[in-house]
Structure formats: structure tokens, C-alpha cells
Length: 189
Image 1 (tube, rainbow, N blue to C red):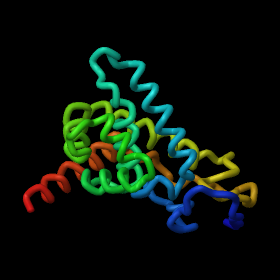
Image 2: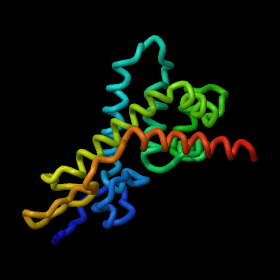
Image 3: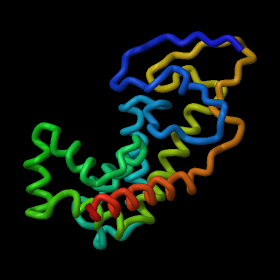
Image 4: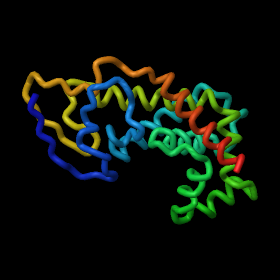
């Protein structure tokens, strides 16, 4: 199979060109290996809105969609530790003030853990949706783009990143479980 990869404008840099074609049935640790940052954010935003439609709006806190999107993005890009998510969140200009206004005096790390515990099913559903949408984008034999790359090939080339569809449900549960485990380990120290 002959493949030419041409770099186009990007927001984030995939870890390697090789990640565009893995030939295996697992998701990358960081979905930005498959889709660019802007696309990933769009997929997460759509997933959050679809899940929110199925929830009772009176039962959701005002920051529900913000936290669901934040945790989905973090777990989809390989960031699991709540304290690391908090640190990355607070590094962004203007976010510290917004966190204080949204969460009050509670440390964001505690809010993140509590949210994950209470809304685990919604988080899992959101991750499954995002994994499926990203997979659909990269496994399409007709696709012209993968992440930040334009792909050209011979007419017979197959760019599906795997021969079988990954188990998105298991992948989502594993990522959430990994986050819980890391938080438990760090809280013991």
C-alpha cells in the first residue's frame, strides 16, 4: 500500500504519523492521534448535548455540561489524575476566576472526583459516543482527512485503523477506572 501524507493547518500536533494507521483494534491513548483538537472538541460538545437531552434538567447542577465535557476531554486525551486536570484547568487564563465563581471555595479536584462518582454513567456514555464518532471518522475508507493530515493513496488502499471495531464500552470503563485508581493512589500519599 502506498500512502502519501501531507500536513495541513492544525491546532494540535498528533504524536506520530504512524498513529494514523495502527492495524490494531484499540483506541489510541490520546484521540488527538486520530482527530485534531477542534474536531475532538466538537465531538465532545455534541455528545454532551445528546446526553443532556436524556437527563432531567432539574436534577443537573448548573456546571454539569462543563464538567462532563472537561472529564470526557481529559480521559479521551490521556489525562486521568484529578489534580492534573485541575492544574491544567487553572493554567488557562481567566479560568481560575471562573472556577471560583462556579465551584465556590471547593477545590476543583474534589468537585471533579465527586462529579465522576455521581455521574459515572453519563461520563461513560459520553466517552463511548466520542470514541465511536472518532472511530467512524478514521475508519471510513472514503475519508480524505485524518486529524491534521490529508491522506492520498492508491484506489485499493484501506486506511481503516483496525480490522475490527474496538469495544468502546470497555475502553470507556477502563479509562474511568484508571482515573479512579490513580486518584485513590495519590490520596494515600
